[in-house]
Length: 480
Image (cartoon, rainbow, N blue to C red; front, side):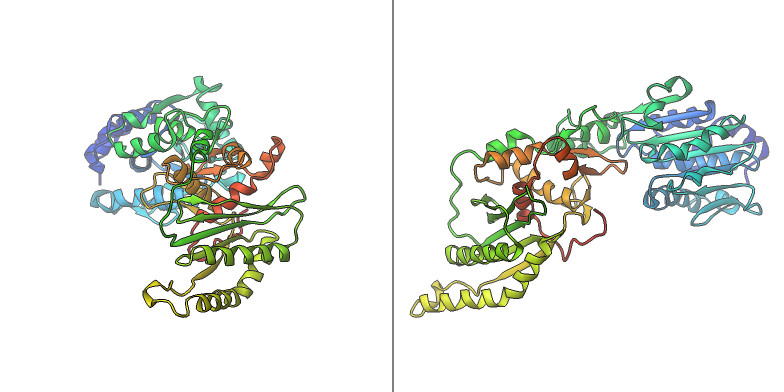
């Protein structure tokens, strides 16, 4: 139990509380945040990634619970993952390592409360999914914690504004500045005078890995929104960025394709047209490094396209006899019919290729005979689950569309892919925009938005993205 006289001191000195009682060492940026919370009713912090904001929020929760009588601390974030797996887990970590605090403050999955007062003296976790998430908290001492505040809808904030009219109520908002509209944005712009605002650039934080910063600069550039949001802690530019730089696509399309002595893998991406003006495209890539000429078809039905795919498979099996062939079909919409037909014919195709080879290699030296023909027909979905291209990638994508296009982007950025020259393909690759969403993930512009800008569906680019994609099992998801 903390000495009552010490509590009176610590109530106005959260940095000393964190150092003396929690036994943590805040860095200068974290000290500024804690001091702002103690001094001002409303604090808004925009920052880059990895500056330790979850830690400072957890310290603020513990400090407020331990130094005020019967406080209430509603905590919210846009997702359960951010709220429970990160913030709430951080609170648990600091309590668990401190017998003095853990004896009095009881941690549960959704609430932290003072022993003996679970309904009157607590912090509670509420995801920001409903307008009433932050309603109904009445006490002399209220502290609202809003994590990843850019992603919280404006209607969630409305009850907070009413509660803040009560003396002793405080608000803390923290997050990557991912949106140029909304409550959090306004707190740093038109409503700035009402807040204590702090800006933390990741380059000025000892907690941010310099390799992370270098990687972001190398991958996206210092003028990109990814750098502005994830490193510099600045709001995005008014206009979104193109996901793939035109100069990368142009450079990859220049000159002759490099020779491959023996192709060991052929990936064929098949994007199936869903609308009258769109095209169906077969995009072959050799050894993930050289794109062969895409095949573009208009106004064909799924059985005709499946037949075209069978022809392509057999042609590449003949031209590159040592290669395994992987066919990736977009199964959103009409593509499922093409996939089903190819899957149905898979063994028949393999048998036809083997019969042809047997006749041509009948009297050949066994060492010169290619291996058994390997064919895979894979189901892909552009609306599937997102994630990282590689385990050490500092950027996550919202869905599999981003992952697929991200693989193309990385190949073009690093110069590891030679493209078949096509002005249409270059235009499609370089005209798609992206944004950094409220979870800090990259989200590509939807096709509907592209069409509103007067652009056609990026069918050639999608087919290329399918060719470079390696689905684990299935990309199926209900997220579109």
